Length: 472
Image (cartoon, rainbow, N blue to C red; front, side, top):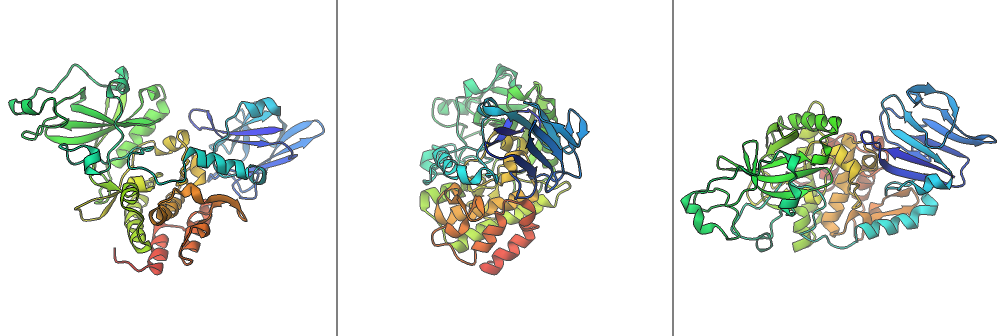
């Protein structure tokens, strides 16, 4: 038995594992005919082979960019238990374990099954996915991913409004001492605020000041924590009459220099974003050793909430919404370097009541690739390469297909992942009542190999508009 484990590029923790019990040759590469498929620009189609001979396992390099062991380029070397190889000088790291002990110490992640695993693991994988995310309508209160929209009204509860809000957590336990929060700096209320103190309102209806604050971060008064995921925290703040949002990394990332640098670098790039269908990013600053990104909130209902509360929509309406999202993605992909959203899903498409564009695209944060690597997507919106810490323009294109299917069926995309004639993948042709002309478009969008998908958003728009002509 041999176990291969893909390691996270920054934390060196397991991201995905493959166990082979019978194979005497295990091949790794970018092509879909490999036992282990790794989508990376520096990985060759057939990059490395692990071969079992009379004296044990050997590593044999096949890739043009080389295979590295302890910083040295190798051609053919014996395998030692626990050894880590790197595919290309800047490529993915794979750890190798031999025997049953190695298999027991790994934690396989759900994702695309490899050649050696597809047949014997298909039913198990499907069962695991259904357990993680039931094939039922998602409720409006479900929130597994960060959002950049909040309620515009403070006079009513979220339940009364039916609008999309972030999950509210226990603020006192979530704001940690080293998060940059000065809890002693409270906002002084005006006389008009007193009659609203003790009510459910967050802000004074007369002067607009927040009625209760947790302290300050920089010059921003923190009103509440909107959400905390495994990567970061999103907070509602107030400054000089404006309600804004702060996004930062969780304090436990403070010692990860590369993560902090990546956050600041990507946050600076977001400051250049200027599009009516995207949030406006205002500032980047550091407080208490924590980097913060300031952004304006967007108001409305997510498409996930729309479907969950009012039911599915027609194919024409679903395509109209997806095409609007495509306009925002086209803008992001045209930036230098391209901005890849990496989290396209109905929860991050916001329907606004009054705006130039009906749908806005939210969920755009720094360290997006890191978030996807440590918080796997079990719902089925993300491309397979994202589970391996890789993201391309084609990854955003992939997510459009399961998003469209959710809008017309109300079912999570993992319902339509299964083991069939092309291995384990998303099969749109098995969606009940699907338009037969839409199937080839969705199949191309969700091809497991990124280079087999559409080349650009423009091509996707042309294909969808040819199917259902819509003026958007």
